[in-house]
Amino acid sequence: MHFRICTLVSSLLHSFATGRLEITMAGVITKFFTASLFMWIAPVAILYGYNNNLIPGSSDLSPHTLTLLSGFLAVVSVNIVIAFYIYMAMKEPSDKHEPDPAFLAEAKASINQSTADAGSSSQSSKKNE
Image (cartoon, rainbow, N blue to C red; front, side):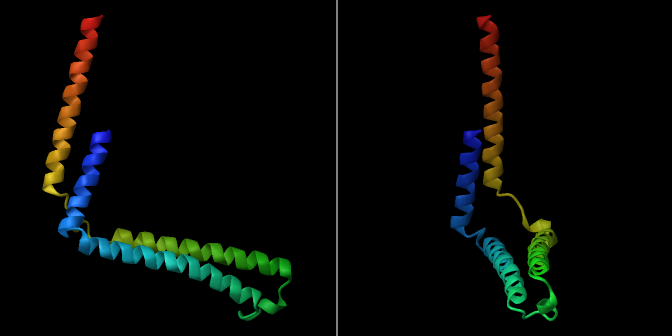
């Protein structure tokens, strides 16, 4: 298992170093930071707007109701941002995500090697019995 993780990491680093992941990674990072930014801005803006009576009708509410309403709307706003982020991720074309052929070859060799190791260890345990 450790070998497979190391193989995956080295393959990703190789792909990143050669520039194959640079274009897609930039888009993913941009979307992630944009969503993260809105996850901070939206609830803080809602709370600020309600607590400073910037939202019409908020001055007529009791402090208890104001706290509950602003908190609820802040949580809903974060969930809307998360849902939008998931929608954007699902909307990405799946044909762009082709695995690296060198990585596939290394992964198959790793699986074959671990299968062979498991078979030889089970045979040696049968001989010991």
